[in-house]
Image (tube, rainbow, N blue to C red; front, side, top):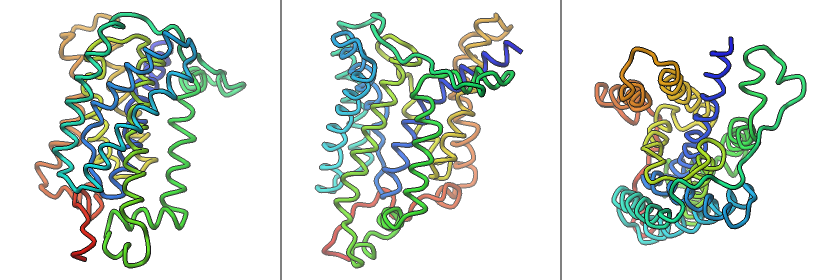
Length: 311
């Protein structure tokens, strides 16, 4: 029982990193913009959170600072891809390289230093007493409840239950028709891309303030790319995203538990489990079927710049 509880607890914590980054990517891609800079944004958010909490030992301040940094870099990315209509894939790759490089440089002074303040568990009365599941799901830090319950429900309601969400999806499906209907296509794309980048940086802050409370170069370790893949796996739906993130968190937790309990499996193989899961559940089906848009329910205008003068 203790093994299962520990496994689920680690799965929730590990899945939270992927869920927050993937939720940011969902709202970005729903308006028709692909942001492949998630890895770099997470690295920037992670080092920002550590640097701020060392100066101001308050995890909320560190998390807010990471969101602000992500918003700033997201606005730069949005200016390039939405306003100047630069290639989204190339800009995303450039953002990843720039973000990881800046984070590595800025983080040298904090390498190996533990965070002076982290998010502590918040126990939910009664629910935390449920055998096995209670300690794993209802004795977590406040960010876990935000990421797995409040945020996906709010995004789902906004996206599928409101007029604004309909406009948002129209921008991603047919920006010319949306523009003709009076929807501000460029403004909507600009701000949702920026907000998605802020959430990606917030995922990096979660990594160093709630999951691994310290900074080291390469701490993101490809989680940004897994988060992008999760969006496809979850068919661009926020509620599906958090469930998929929990699944991949469970795969990650299996690797940690296996190493801790000396399972007769090579540690390198256990560490590869999340990436093998990405290959098995996402990349291979896409390659085999060769029908990415049908498989993933991607917005029709995803990755395409909008030129108002050629509607």
